[in-house]
Amino acid sequence: MKSKYKHLSAKQPIGVFDSGVGGLTVAREIRRLLPNEDIIYFGDTKHLPYGDKSKETIAGYSTKIAAFLLEMNCKAIVIACNTATANALKEVKKLVGNRALIIDVVNPVSEKVAYELHQNIGVIATKGTVASGIYRKAIRKHNKFINVNELATPLLVPAIEEGFSNHPITRAILANYLSNKKLRGIETLILGCTHYPLLEREITQYYGKAVKIIDSPQIVANELRHRLGKHQLLNKDNPQPSYHFYLSDITRNFQRISRKFFGNKIGLELKVL
Ligand code: DGL
Image 1: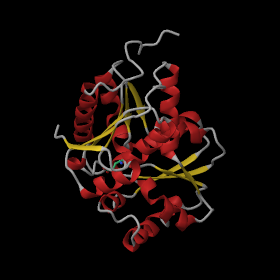
Image 2: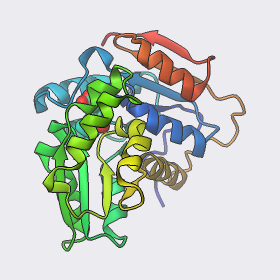
Image 3: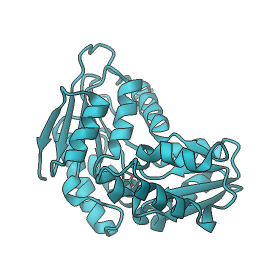
């Protein structure tokens, strides 16, 4: 097969971006599945949350970040943000062209659930993701018989960014959202925002075993491994990979979670685009 990424090399880093700490759930999984890869992460904490911004604004932020990750010589860019995927995937793809592989967080997850035994799927996500209807469209492209019910849960990202994950307030907000009638009767729940796996324990506590929670970061990291492998771009010889984090505003919560996931030796740098 003639690869359109022939000019790229396996030694180049993988770029990952999100509005804040959410994408760290994806980056953590990438490191687990691909332990020889260097990772460059951009967290747009200055502009957070993306969930209530307009499409044009989100596309503007996302293309700037993608251009920065290209400058940093990334061979692949993982849009580890559902809201950016829903509002800016086309624009990012257009800007990047064949200069790097693009992996988003919605399509690999939608394709996987569409071919499993699901009938009633719930999706919780930001307002910007729900308004786009991206999950319903992406799942039903593969399987028209699945009911997809999307619910906007806008208070969760601010609570997570404030470090309120394991807190009675957040559990009360969650109980309020998850008891919404739109989610009645679901067998499966997609966490349609990369911040939400940080609440996975609380969500599982709410449902018990009644509802299957989809592990999006793992599906996305698998897709990345598959795509890199297909183009001979997997880094096989890098025993001491580097993890570098750029933030448009340094927040304590980001420092805390990035160190919890990646250890104390990571580089953390302010970068305003
Ligand atoms: N983590 C992002 C997502 O997956 C967005 C959070 C936000 O900034 O609203 O949608």
